[in-house]
Length: 254
Image (cartoon, rainbow, N blue to C red):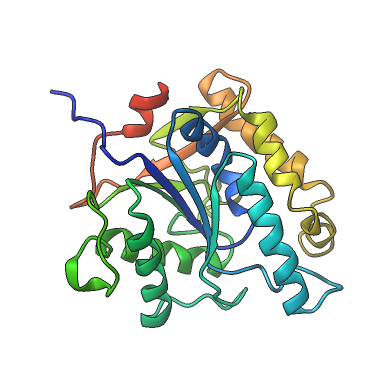
């Protein structure tokens, strides 16, 4: 028997920096929004190291506004845990922030960084998402009240940078791929909201055009699915997480 759909249709991406979601899961968030889901986009940091010209306070303010503007493209809400860029640490204080965030939202689906990625902020934020998704429904895990329907959510890991495991240099094999061809224009619109990052990524990462980099990777995953553009995910199926592939059921991924 096919498992039933969740009563709560609330999705959250919990990633490290403003613009991370736009690279790896915004197309899928668009599809969920179109299907009537409530969408939240959260970051561990405001990206306060993401400028070669502005100081941390200034660029953080710019990037919070960019993150909120990108979220508004699909009617989503932007949140920030206010950890420090390039200094995200998985500990009790940061973990409490993540648990409290999920307690307020009660998501039934969460998108997170994979365990291994090109920078430690992503890997530490992965751990924050793992802790929070497991713990937020637990009565004594937070002083905040539980929303009716709070439960361990479906958890999907987004692609690492380039879809490549940085420790083996091998392409990650996803458990599902989502066709985002019709949503690609909005995904691009969301990424372009992060205008401050174009010069920064050119300076530090050697990426001359970050929209083209996102487009190339989306096209690579799309080719695997036989469509123009796609996003790829690995579902976390360990106890007590749901093992039914909800994204595949919703959007016919292969």
